[in-house]
Length: 337
Image (cartoon, rainbow, N blue to C red; front, side, top):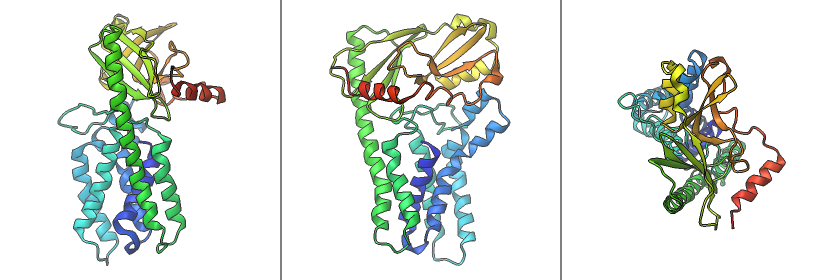
């Protein structure tokens, strides 16, 4: 999830744990604890882009890190706030809930998270939520700001923290239902349309949970299409993108390439843009692909010009967006009849 959502949700959980007995300091600790795993952003100050991609949501998002950092934070909070009547056990439970909640939620989008690092490099990704989903984030966001404004004894505070915690998880349940429904439809469509594939995934398009991006294929290339939960058409339009591994021969020993392959989990294609080889990680979608199915991919890495790869994950997400494109997205969400 995005950092603002983690902060707001952490503050609501802090309020839930301590309520009137600890004041708004509980919200501060909650926001801090939910943000701790994202301390890995500092790696970008000295790591190259390809290395940083794997460092983010790596060790600081692992179960081992959580087990190590929770008692440290509990001891720090217990010492800072002496004298108090809060047990070390409660502090530990509080920080455990916060940190593990962060790890749990981050697994629901497409970046991937290294729960088992350093014992296993596998990245878990449920591809259920877009990294910034307004309908998930709005509830803890509203609750957070209202709790900041109201005094600690205001009667609405319990209702606010309950709204900030339970509403996003109710929405997450709805998103999981959408995920299972879309996956079932896509599997049936691929069989009916004879789409050859060894692996596939579905993930939401930007800012919503109704229009889904579909990638299916094998080592020769990938078929890409879009499916709305409101589609009534029994079929899908797929476009094939060859993987083009042969283009990688000149840079086969390139260290960045090995990192990128690992990061992409095998879902990649290679293209030649003029004199530059471009590595596309398909998991992050296309730039307005529901409008133009041959559009470029959001994540594209210049293999021969590494200095041009700053903000690689973000740079293409909203390229070309305007009022008309938003309307086009809404129309596509409405479904193919």
